Length: 293
Image (cartoon, rainbow, N blue to C red; front, side, top):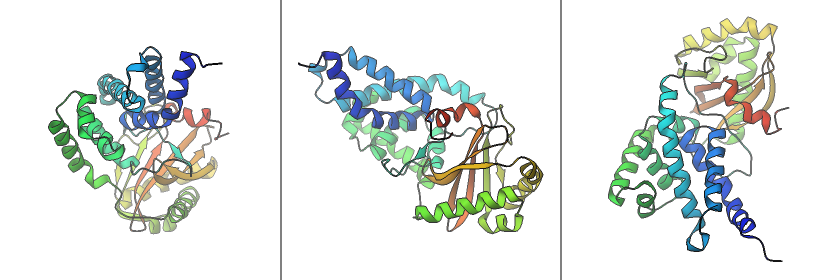
């Protein structure tokens, strides 16, 4: 029996869904928002005369990008009023995931771009879309799209990965960091940190976290010295070690039974930046995927 039009729409859409979600997540920094955008795109795909579509992927990429651009406009005010540092929602990568060099620091740098710069950069530099197609997607001339991507590339160049650290070595450092930071071993912790290390903690006003990034090894060590007695009384439990937004790190379950993610940017064998997500709203998808029980 021939498939119904609805089933044909599902069959053509589902293979593209993971890549569309990756695009939407990198545009928005939110897993839930990315999934909502892609579901909206699917509903539009159902209602489309698909016989007139030459490339399903190109069509859906255009729909998802435009929906993301609309979403970013409404999200700008939320970011401006967000309490404390804003970090993207942590995504744990498995060995099967498509490897892309869109790490957490790069996603934070993308946040500082205009929406069109972000779209042009991601589409061209990450998803290999030509400028003629990008022009059709964002409604600008190809030359303007080339300028948008070039300007974005200049602004985020410092956040592209610069050192090829084997994943296993990164996870060794992440393991050592967890052990030293939770046990109060400040000497061990000092040996892992770069002198100009920065710690970012995103609590979103819902869990305790520093209102500003903490710069420098002395202040980061002082923070962990202050936290040592809390960790001694309320132990953290590692749920898993792995790559989080392209960086080595770990997911922990804290004493209040809420998950927390920690990702580390490592340069020349030293931890240059620590990214901690404590906002429970940004960790729900980790609980919901069933992998964090």
